Image: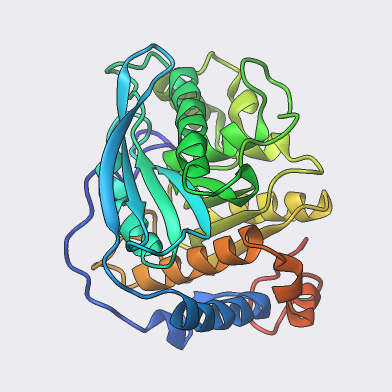
Length: 337
């Protein structure tokens, strides 16, 4: 591996078409706290009672990139007659140099079946139309703005919208939510109400100086300025709620850096839920290969429905609040370690 940002091959190509369901994860291979178990149980009940698992509506559109060009946005809506209850726009992985909006189609399609308006957005890639990471971030901001307008037409205001993505795409979503546009300052007010990140890089300074230089070169970051793009450096009170799903054997973004990020978020008084998938590597969340896809979708839908739909506090149990302060035996603490 030549760079710390190098994505798993699965993060650069559309995922396989197989949808084989494996339940090994729910038998104990997913390391979660008790609060998530309760939330997952609740959301499955909500889904069964409130949302018909029928084929949704799919379409595509374009949005204007920061350079004025058109970029793809694939849209996935609940079935005809079903009002979406929340929305999320997602960005694919691929080290900012590969991949396309097609990469997260299975995720968006499945979320739409849960009553969520979901979009997968492309962005300019470095080495092609983008010069550096700033171009990618600018496009992500434009995509979020465009998605917000589309969501408003569907009855969803900004308090019910999230952003997210996989690997480098998850990093883009975090940066767009935490850092102000055009300046290395904390975002005064996030453009989204929550972020869902799948195996993201969250601490660019956690790597050795040599690997950090390679990362800066590959991402078009000026030498010595990686700190300006490192989400952990921008943790402040008031960051939006976040769900991070990560494999414990991720060799691109080691789990220890994500745990530190979670701890920093908790210490700042923010809502950050980390779900660890034991023995899973990078790009573990696609369908058909690792058996984790269903669990990733369940957790994502649970989080979005809990945090973004009306009266979320009423659905949060005392077990969840207690779990944020205690470490269940044999499981990773959801709060500072």
